[in-house]
Image (cartoon, rainbow, N blue to C red; front, side):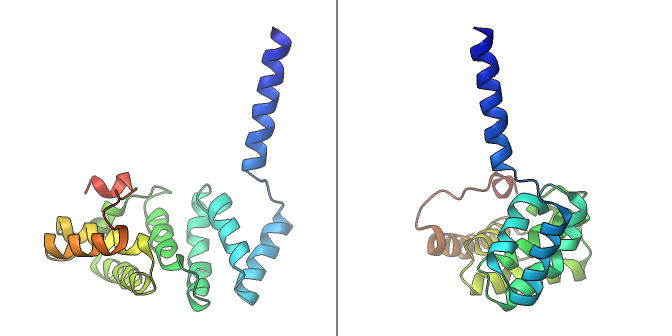
Length: 167
């Protein structure tokens, strides 16, 4: 019985290791160069998914990479910029509600990128904007506009972000 238990634990540890790749410093540097030099979507997504969200110092470092990916039309780079900016300002924590805690120029900057992302068909950016209209965050409260944006994106589906529902 103990042997089976240890085998199960070993399998779980190995599978967790496969889901959280550990990159060497050289591999991370290569991915960053690929982003800057080639606008490499795969490297950007790998850093965003596996490294950027886990290391609060990288949130600041990821901002220029998000800007670069906007140039090559990465569909969610504007949202990534928004998320990384908030994580950088609030010690690694992401909550869209924190927009109201920022200085007005910072709010304007983030709204600019959310709107730009929404224009580039980012459902995440449009979803945040919809919720901001719904709750009068940054924009004047406008339920009809919020519903209109929401319906255009989600076609009646439930929006997945729990953080936004807490606004």
